[in-house]
Image (cartoon, rainbow, N blue to C red; front, side, top):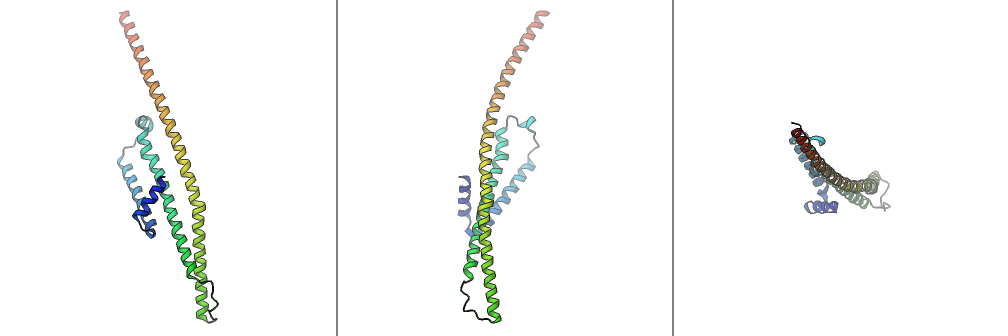
Length: 190
């Protein structure tokens, strides 16, 4: 759903021929923003500073990487679409019927150019299909697995933090009772 929304945003803000340029520019801007944020943030360790700030850690690290992966998929889809159009245009440029070409050197050169156009078009179509079938399919699978595992991790950490908080409170209560008993024992011993 997020990838579809991002795709809609890309297609609304950019013409189809500018989709790759806009997508690449927004990826670059997002990376630059992320680098600036990281440079300004103090170095924190999970054990010392972030134990009770898992939500912040999740929002600043995991979710941006998920969005970036979805954005890469959108850029690759745009690339495949452009390759497909380019290939179809090149194939359409080179007519199949070259019978009215004579055997003069100009006609032979023109025939070779048409064959080159056709071959380039077929290569572009093949590249578009490979991007769609191999790269995008794999990245979509990775993104889906990343989201699923992320949801499970998030739920497990929330549960773990709840249990740790309950244990910490129980420990503090028992420690306070122990301190009170020790104080009473010291007072009685005097």
